[in-house]
Image (cartoon, helix red, strand yellow):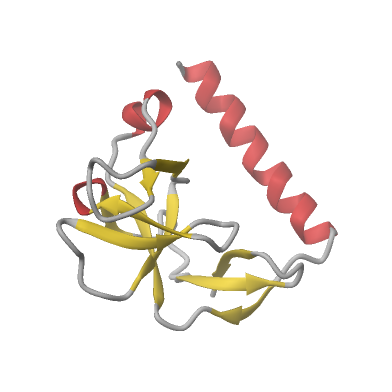
Length: 127
């Protein structure tokens, strides 16, 4: 387990370095959306996935899997589900039980801002 975590920790800075080297930047915030996090422990994050559904119902079709940070609509939930945007820009729904407010894991005071990135795709800006 620790080996897996060390591998993940080693890869994250590499990915950030690649994005920075390619000049990938947040260029425009997404109005009406906020960052949320999956409401899972670190152990659960290693073994479980959170489905993104086509509608606000547990019987809706699974259309994707959520990442650890989620672009959530700043709107009231519907039937216990929060509207979200997948990173490809398509909408979906996640059970509110599986979401929590995003909290900066570091002590630098940065905030997460759902954004359009310099390559035109959706992502996250941190400021």
